[in-house]
Image (cartoon, rainbow, N blue to C red; front, side, top):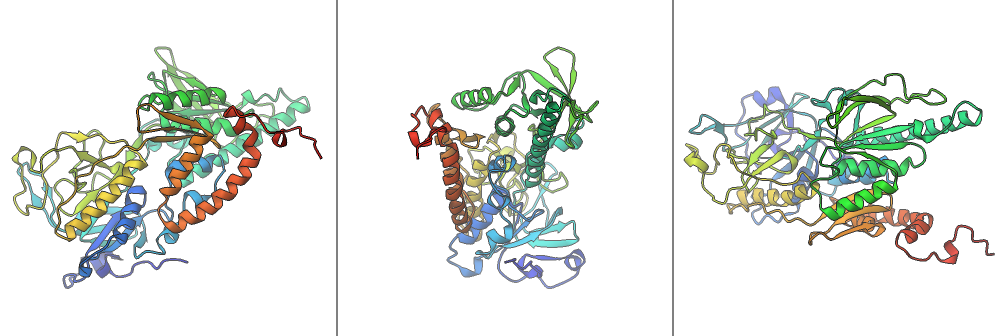
Length: 518
């Protein structure tokens, strides 16, 4: 079924901007909480707010979730769409389906502007806010809020400053990116078959080395992508991973790095450590092959190794796994960290200087202040419920779904506390380990104890179980559990010999590939 869209500004929903500007009586009704962004931080904040108990029914808010897409994307599992071991609905269910059992309203649209309803001056000349405001959409509609949660996250920086990345490389940040990459993999597989057919008729060598895929970025996401692509294209294309001088996954636990290296080596991935991508462009002469078949995603990558001169090579696919950019435009009236452009928040996740605005997830930069006072004595000249201008000391948190999950709980609770006249809770991050996928039945899980790391099929099962638990709703979790049990049974029958071999377990006779018993 499809959830009805909001039609009345009295409930924190959409109206035309002309209506928003018109004179009307002050709003009287339940508090309006608007959440910008339907990723882990935004969606989970909305669901938590909906699930909380409100002793004073008049304080129970109308929660509106605004996102430009129609689907929530469980980003850590986009790799399963690249290797096509899952369907779109499993990794990216629609907001309509997820929110159907709740009272959360969903508005689809691009945010054009955020305007606060008042201005609170600070001693340094900057301003904040103490009340609600309006979110303006690109469609001309507007959504009024009493409380705002900014959770727009980040997007791939492929379209930012690197020459040619936007036009010729494929990132992996959205559902559309995953679909493009899966399509490119199918194109490479088809081209390989064309090459082999041509070789069979004397038209060329048919060697898979004529097909090449480049993955730019040696961080965790780049290594995951290289492993998944190499497994899918085994024997059909070579995969090259371009990493900085620090090598692959320099900020990950050593045990997890070792497991990743072993997997990449076993998959035949060539790691080019100490390389720097220079630009990506249209292929110089088409990727050579016996059939002279160039696929649509083909591109030229120019790179430099150490102090040597740059060189250019053609690839069938160039995957981009470097950098993220904040999705909140600088025109939004919130203080920013100059280095990352993220929105500065107190440890309670309340935006500095804005008493009724919170920020969570990748878009937030948490100020690590041990005191509850204002830094430098710059207290606002009005409402004491407003924090001070930007600080200069931050709590550095990883840009992961794990952080967004946890911050969503705190943001929802602190909105509840604000409406209930209770003290706000400072966010405390609890690291519960790191998970990465390396193949259909392979993963590496760094446990939060020392340098203990699990890898292989056991780690892959643990990763699936953890992500099943983290799915946003019980309804979606139940559907996934049923689907994954069916898939698991099929995969076990197909992959059992390889899994048992990787675990060092003798292969039973009935699983032997040449078993001819009646």
